[in-house]
Length: 414
Image (cartoon, rainbow, N blue to C red; front, side):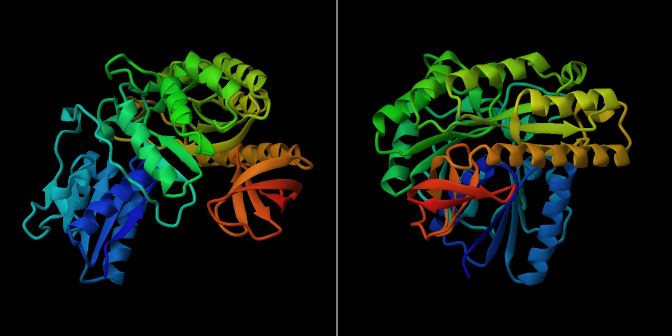
């Protein structure tokens, strides 16, 4: 039985899981379960532990390998589990040598992630069961938001040189991927430490220039405060850059933003969205939002609720605040758990209504959709579409939007 990869968390983890798969196959790893964990919330860690126990029950003879951000940050949590055979850090998981002789490896191989100074391209050229491809161009983060543990799992910001990115993107296009999603921990900080300090906008412009056959380029989560002038011009000029931006907003209240140590204000988010919308009217915005951050009052929370309308956010990724040991926010006065859960529920309901409104506005229009299966796909603005006729997975379909379920578009292929 071949190695099974179980992925938690972000698109970057999804990308790295394919790199892990390639290394495991090359090393001849068999009858193993490799769990690529997430540490963004305590719930993510709990889910990974639950999955480890389930993997041991279902495959009692398999080698259980745990890696990813949670393994990097708290290796002791996983090494203390009798179900686990090997714990690998975030650098070690991409080292082919880690899989060469599993029996001889130390049980815990997790080194200082801040000692990693460069980001090598992984040259992942296929994504099992996926119609779109992820491409890592950046890793790590130099900022220290008070709630965030991820820099301690990913290290300092570092970027893949432009030439290597284009080479990997070319391989993906040649392998039939019509859409590429650029991924990173702090994507908009791309290039700051590279020679000449290229920006994310310059990288995107060169990808689109040298790969004219690429149908669509999409960005994963971005920090609007780092959005560079080249990127602003490109989203206005090139329709192949997807009109969908997912923003790391976190809150709609200025005092909470300061306590989070964020670098933007409420007004900045609204003005940023307005500016992009003037340049690209069909653009759609998503946002990460935290409900129940320490010291958040009902009035502060209502500021976040109103921001959804004022910035016209359509795709909300809502996180109930989760204290992470070692972060400043974990030591701040907490909002009661029941209030946190209630606010998160209200914010999710707000997001459902905002999405329904956005989708209703698309009825009667014609959209280009990437077919993910024979019967479903995604538009450029990331709306899910159900096709009334069968489509070819991986192809780009002209879809006339006939209706909506409130969360999904219904379309005729034309």
